[in-house]
Image 1 (cartoon, helix red, strand yellow):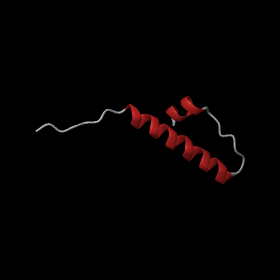
Image 2 (cartoon, rainbow, N blue to C red):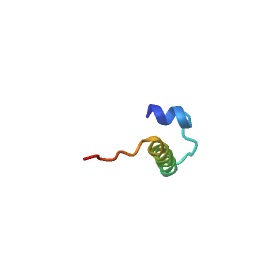
Image 3 (tube, helix red, strand yellow):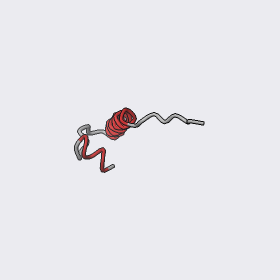
Image 4 (cartoon, helix red, strand yellow):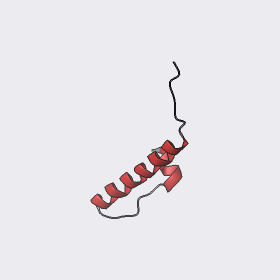
Length: 46
Protein backbone atom coordinates (compact mmCIF):
# COMPACT_ATOMS: atom_id res chain seq x y z
CA UNK A 1 0.00 0.00 0.00
CA UNK A 2 2.92 2.31 0.67
CA UNK A 3 4.17 2.02 -2.89
CA UNK A 4 0.70 2.64 -4.36
CA UNK A 5 0.29 5.79 -2.27
CA UNK A 6 3.75 7.05 -3.19
CA UNK A 7 3.20 6.46 -6.91
CA UNK A 8 -0.43 7.53 -7.38
CA UNK A 9 -1.21 9.79 -4.44
CA UNK A 10 -2.78 9.12 -1.09
CA UNK A 11 -6.45 9.49 -1.95
CA UNK A 12 -9.10 8.13 -4.28
CA UNK A 13 -11.03 10.63 -6.38
CA UNK A 14 -14.29 8.82 -7.11
CA UNK A 15 -17.21 9.11 -4.69
CA UNK A 16 -19.19 5.87 -4.91
CA UNK A 17 -17.90 2.59 -3.49
CA UNK A 18 -17.81 0.64 -6.76
CA UNK A 19 -15.90 3.46 -8.43
CA UNK A 20 -13.35 3.54 -5.62
CA UNK A 21 -12.83 -0.21 -5.86
CA UNK A 22 -12.32 0.03 -9.62
CA UNK A 23 -9.92 2.96 -9.20
CA UNK A 24 -7.87 1.10 -6.60
CA UNK A 25 -7.72 -2.03 -8.77
CA UNK A 26 -6.57 0.05 -11.75
CA UNK A 27 -3.78 1.52 -9.61
CA UNK A 28 -2.69 -1.93 -8.46
CA UNK A 29 -2.70 -3.28 -12.03
CA UNK A 30 -0.61 -0.36 -13.25
CA UNK A 31 1.86 -0.82 -10.39
CA UNK A 32 2.14 -4.56 -11.09
CA UNK A 33 2.83 -3.89 -14.78
CA UNK A 34 5.59 -1.39 -14.03
CA UNK A 35 7.11 -3.73 -11.45
CA UNK A 36 7.05 -6.63 -13.91
CA UNK A 37 8.81 -4.53 -16.56
CA UNK A 38 11.71 -3.94 -14.18
CA UNK A 39 12.17 -7.57 -13.14
CA UNK A 40 14.90 -9.56 -14.84
CA UNK A 41 14.06 -12.76 -16.68
CA UNK A 42 15.69 -15.73 -15.05
CA UNK A 43 16.94 -18.60 -17.15
CA UNK A 44 17.91 -21.97 -15.70
CA UNK A 45 21.38 -23.09 -16.68
CA UNK A 46 21.98 -26.81 -16.32
